[in-house]
Image 1: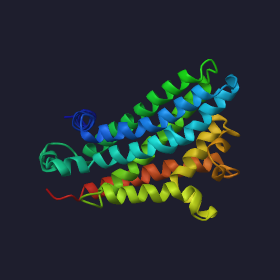
Image 2: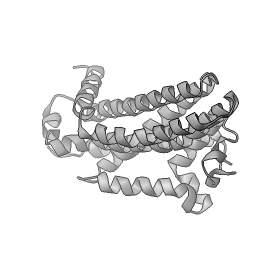
Image 3: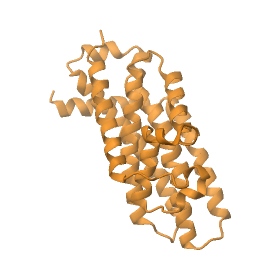
Length: 254
């Protein structure tokens, strides 16, 4: 079987075993909360089209990028490895004629696309609510940031799953730490959090010059780094994290 066929097979296996699991139900319940919040805010807003557009831009910080991509990365990133461990099917995978790297890469790609697809669905629904503002340019820019964010967070939690047999609790603690880090840790250390760089990049791409002020004072004058640095940080975190996860998975004993 060719490497590409192995990747596709692992992606299909991941989709069949994870998408229909309880994991997806929990994720859906968490994701619907910010969507409801936005719907209520949009319906109660009596502003013009530009005001609704700014509401849409600002909500990206609470919904697709501030909440959905993180918990989506957690639930589906952990499942790249831990799902097979919990189900007892990892041994079966490892004795199959698949390269171990392709097992992880195929499942990682499926998880990333799954999180990205969920964000896209939410963004389309939100876009409909702010019509006729029609922020199509901002929509595609937000999608680009969402894809990178999905890849980054799925990578982070895939890596965490290689260190713990039951990684959910450590992953939640890590997520809480980096999420609260935006407003609680010393300002200079915010540059170490992926959330800061993701929101910084989104703000630049979408043009949300003032939108971030709508969701809390902790964002005021926060984005003072170059967006190119944020892009490089997220790409490096994704590539290095995935490389380490592949290396650790290669050492797993059957």
